[in-house]
Length: 266
Image 1 (cartoon, rainbow, N blue to C red):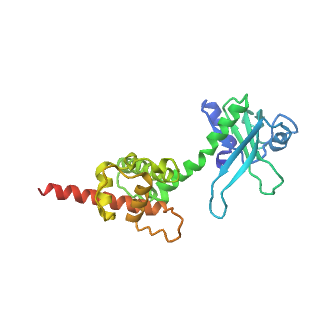
Image 2: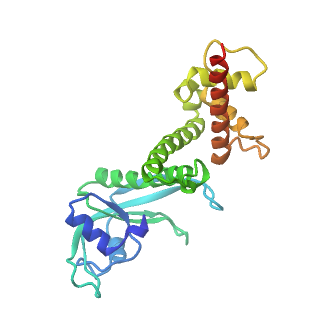
Image 3: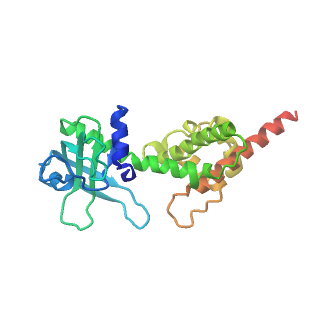
């Protein structure tokens, strides 16, 4: 994101021939036009439009933004206090929300990828859109879900192993929430997420009915795991927190472990 808009970082990526996509944090000096990136961007013709779904976050409501897409090759000038660096040739992609609103969305993206068409520019925008999913994953993995940041291990190897295991679980929790929020995917079999033994034990724990012949859907699995984590849906949102899903997941693993221990008594 914008924290990566450092001249040293961009220089390193170029020297190592590594691909990158960075959101610009400042209107840098460029060789083109009147010496500033954002003012140059305002002179570029729109290459097309895109409708972007902006998710709800904090006090921000979910909404649709209609964007103008622009692109051009540019060359960033080295900062005045860093003349030891060479200028950096790269490609610019702009996403500017239409309208006169004072709080318009504006993404100024810098990339190593050659951009010569609207389709290539839109591909770069789609890459950047995925940052929300990446941020959600790190939130689930590091703090609000599996809490990998809280791990305290005596061995570096053990820390790495457990971090990887928790990363897979965080992915599964995020996948469960994503599928539950999709009208189409929420109706598919929960065996995409849970093995047969897991959903059957959860059914027996939560439902006062016989096991169904076929596995219930994803939506049922989501609600079941949330209920195991203590979710009551008191706010009537139909959406449990990741922390609740994680607690429910842990309880389901305890139920599975208890089942296996009971079997070993036979």
